[in-house]
Length: 515
Image (cartoon, rainbow, N blue to C red; front, side):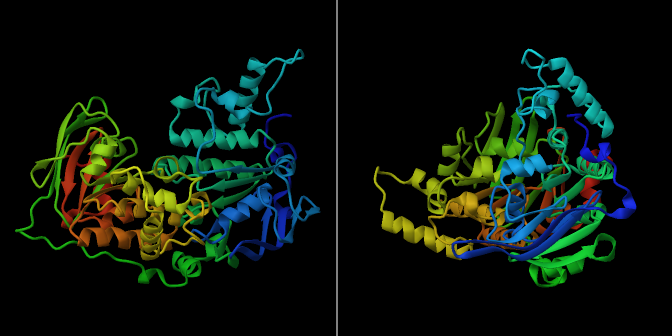
């Protein structure tokens, strides 16, 4: 095994457009749900073929069928001139199909080189792990892709973007001929995204076929040779990347024009409305430094800044997840500074975390259990009224339009947008007054985003406090009444309504404008 992309060893002439994958009539159903219906798809060597659609459109099921995790009900998969009714995971890997998911699966305590060859280790003649050979081959593979990482660096020292790149290199080390990427840039900054997209072009130049799944349409237009749209499990269309515009894609994804999407009217200022929440001198040494601001009931206060500016660290401190060195939280003049998350919940705070799957949900438990858990933590007594609990959860599921066959469905089986709504349902049942959103629409399709925005607006209209951390510029500019900009652990300025623009947010975030 050379460790180089297979296409680099067996170059295919560009002009032949060799087909690596042809899928015909792919159909997969679950009880009560048609996940895929008669889907056709193909991929050529050296092509980046983007797959887009709302959450629940069938993208995840498509990936699982291709990677061998699920067997289709009907349809054929033709890979490299051989036809299959279904694949096993081992078959898919042996054929050169590699999937890199949004969440890192690397081992933080191992080096880059060890992670790349984990599971197919380089061994000495006597059967021991060959460290020097592993590091040499890892370096050669990365150099062939224009990556200058030191293979002896421990993965825990890497940034999120660097970990994503190592995950891709790991996939290529197994002679990948088809690389499937599922939302690889969901938690990356703009510069990190550019770095990753540049790597994909290099990989495609090695004649590896890439299936790229993303909710960020600007990325799709930047790298996509072709774009296929899925909706409700069906293939709507396939376009050449340079011949389709954003409005058409959105219309095909959600069934209506982009111009009809949700637009939030800013909260009307009122001289008589009290500043209900005051964050006063919040500090954690080396992380957050002397943060002070106020938020009025009924407004949405956005927090912008570059990755690493301290935004997530601030909301964790506000919720009592991390220990602060100084600071008070005052609500209507009353000190509610939490020392623990349970203390925060009892004082009417809730935190919708950036990583809903790791810190917001218990994936292997039901919708009912996930929605009820915070509410039950506030109730006295050792016993539950199961009938009452069923009714309360069913009501909130209907109210938020959570798409699930049953409240007993495991949350892991829901789409990303519906998982986020389960997190919201959990907190809404606590009657919280202060909602802290950290990247509320990360990894969520444009239709589900609209529903989340409506829920946030509804909370604000009820006089609740809404604080929203976001890396999405359009989200910050369209949803926020005011935007606080963080840089280097400090809040360097607060933009008022008439000052908010993408240019202003970016300029303050990088220090191009000083206040």
